[in-house]
Amino acid sequence: LTDPRGIDRLFIDSPSGFTPLAKKIREVIAFARENTDKTKKVLLFIATDGLPTYDDGYPNLDEFKRVIRDEIDHEKIHIMFLLCTDEQESVDYLTAFRTTVPNVHVCDDYETERRSMRHVYGGNYQFTRTDYYIHALFALSFQFSFGVNTFFHFTTHRTNLKERMGNCCSGLQKDGKNGPPPPDRQSGPPPPPVRGRDDDNRGGDPRGGGPGPAGRQKK
Image 1 (cartoon, helix red, strand yellow):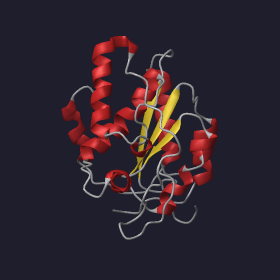
Image 2 (tube, rainbow, N blue to C red):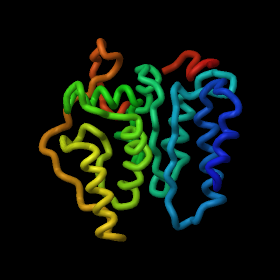
Image 3 (cartoon, rainbow, N blue to C red):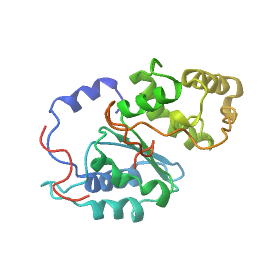
Image 4 (cartoon, rainbow, N blue to C red):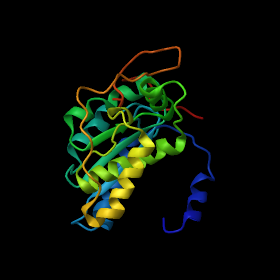
């Protein structure tokens, strides 16, 4: 896209169908190989709300895993999964990638991230969708560009999120090409997230992690 108005045509057709992730990722990889500078890296953001399938809805989780594990140059292509659901079955299959495949990251859905933030900062903490999108779209970019994990997961640092983002931008302005200052070091592991509905504290990994007709069905 070179003109923001071009986005409108992408939303003319309502969402429908299944979740052909393996097929689409192969198409994106092929496009990147043919149309990007071979010396530059690629950030791939994948927004998904279901298990991977073929075009007819039949599950192909194993094929999807092979694509992510074996068909991608992980030094050149970094991946961020943006979860659009908190259904455990639909996100569990991503968990293993964080520990077995380099440069693959997962960002939970907005409601789960907001509960995690309020678990740390209190029930009245203001965490907007704008905060969420800034993190989802730019956190990986900072890590990718500067080699530092500035605010990769909201709850890994107990300082105020907006303050951290402001300091980071100030650092970019002051230091120019040197990038933002190094991140704070927090002692000990991050606090546990709060996953699921407000009255269903099931716990789980804050970054998210299955067979049967998979994927989001017709909407």
